[in-house]
Every structure is written in structure tokens, then in C-alpha cells.
Image (cartoon, rainbow, N blue to C red; front, side):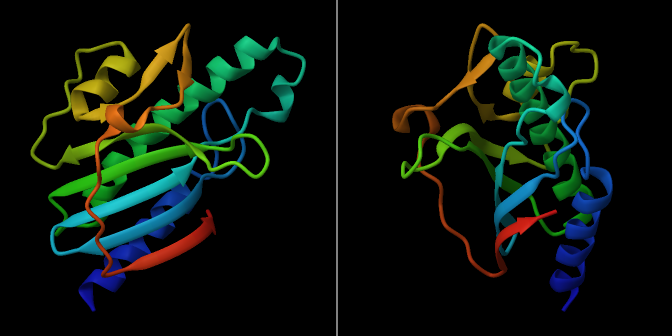
Length: 167
């Protein structure tokens, strides 16, 4: 029962703390949350560009979306370990929409550990995210889709499962 309360606290935390992003006012959409033992998997859809960015050039909009996705990855990592006390490792994956009728593009993936110390003296957000254990590829500040060999294979866990929740 304690796990259910912690999951509820996590969901409320996402709704409260991540309702709006710094660069996008769109809500964060959790695609999947699975918990087994001391491991959790969390997949989410990256926030779209803010409607106020419509007048920006496309590369600038895409850089903002990428920056927001990296910020969300760190925030989700922190929230998972703050709210889900029994979790020691978390596999995180961020997706973005691709062409119609095509599968989603995986752009951030990796496993983060509770015991990993997040270095506060590092100014680069991209470097902080990489040092936490997440993999991604930036091309001129824009996240590109990861290839299967870049992201590895994730173990599926399934004690708690939520699908397509817009938070």
C-alpha cells in the first residue's frame, strides 16, 4: 500500500512542480510509469514548443524544446528519488512525435541511480544530464533521435503501470 501512496505523491508532484516548463507552458505527458522492487521506468513525451515561440525561427524553437526536455529529465530524476523512497535506480526515456503513422522518436534515454551525486558546480545543463547517466545527442543545440545501439536495452518492470497520463 505504501508504494501506491508514493506513486500518488509522485503524480501529484509532477502535476504541481512540472505543470509548466521554463520554456514551454505545455503540460508534461507521462506515457508510462512502471515500478518493481527498487527500480522504476518512466517514459514521457517532451513538451512541444510554446505557442509564443511561433514567430521564432525553427532552429531556435527546436533548441528551446531540446533545452526544456533536458530540464525535464533532471526534474523527473529528482522527483522520482524524492517521492519514491524505495527506488534506487530509474530508467528514463523521453520521446517526441515523429512523422504521422511513424513510431515516436527516442531522444533521451538512460539509467540514473539514487546514489549518483549530481554535481552542482557544473554550469552546462547538457553535461549535468550526461553525468547523471542519461544518453542523448545534440546537433547544434537540438536533440536528435537516438539510434538503438546508442540507448541500449531497458529491462521491463511492471508492478505499477500508468498509460498516457497528461499531467
